[in-house]
Amino acid sequence: MNPELAYYVIRYYGNFMTDAESRANLHLIGTVKTTFGRDDAAAQQEAKQKKPNYPLLSDDPEVVELSKDGMRAFRERTAIRILEDQGSDVFLNYCPRCQGLARTPQARQCRFCGQDWHPTKPD
Image (cartoon, rainbow, N blue to C red):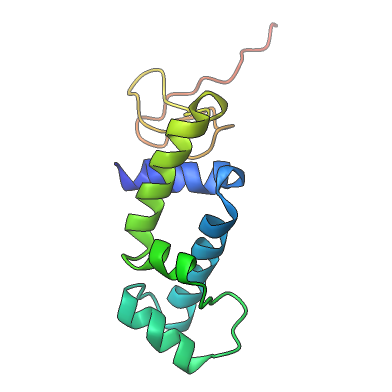
């Protein structure tokens, strides 16, 4: 899966994540913040040692299992699951000209080709 698509689904449709997925996402965010950009399993252990009371980090085995391969793999797996389970509720906003994925579901101008698809106002 394209990392941009995975980010888009998690960012704008994260409400479809399970409780464990939400906690794993927070765990990975806390790891990245604590270890200055690293998210691998070693970084997760290091983050727990640096800030044992950091509220985003988790020792829950389900959270650790979901986050063991890092942020990118977690996002891809979770986005695929969301698209499979809730695909009819997810709006993928593609540019009508170049088919690039817009930055947000509400965007009306393409960041790739500059196409503008705002509704036109009558004069």
